[in-house]
Length: 179
Ligand code: ATP
Ligand code: MG
Image 1 (cartoon, rainbow, N blue to C red):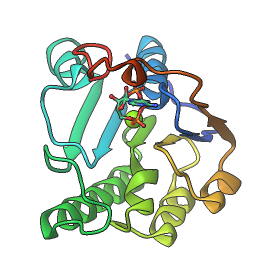
Image 2: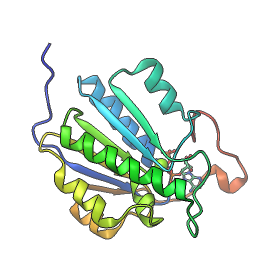
Image 3: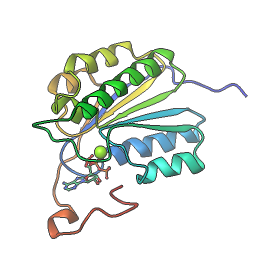
Image 4: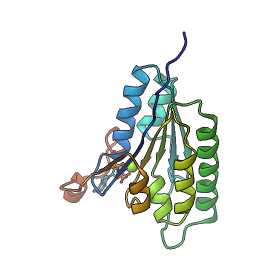
């Protein structure tokens, strides 16, 4: 069977401080897979197999590849470790390679906006990824604090606004919902 490709791929940015950015990208992945597309998700600043999407992809979704390029621990914005920086840079290399090859129809760079905001990678490096995206590839960039230049260069830009979150009534992150 010959796979179809997206004719003219767009760039999406999902940002803001409300819940739903990573899961919106995963919803899009599910929809794309349903139409026979191949999806690659690279998660910056995450390094735990506990995430439901990592497990679901491995067990049930051969057309969704999820690669993590971060540590299991949170990054200290004021003082990121050498390993945090090295892993983010490795993630950037992987993103460049995946985009250049154009094998995947949908490429999701999860939390890449946060990696820029924390200084792990540069704004210019992300703008370069947006420029090298092949015509047929749909690209999604997620994470809080998206730089205005990134928003400006995107075709779809959505801001999730925090109105409420169970966290504020003391509910800890729940398996299967928050991760
Ligand atoms: P999700 O992964 O559920 O789609 P997200 O990608 O929008 O959320 P992030 O900004 O990446 O959220 O936040 C990381 C984690 O914090 C996620 O587990 C998310 O569910 C949770 N979270 C999202 N918004 C809030 C909030 N306002 N307060 C506390 N935790 C939040
Ligand atoms: Mg997220």
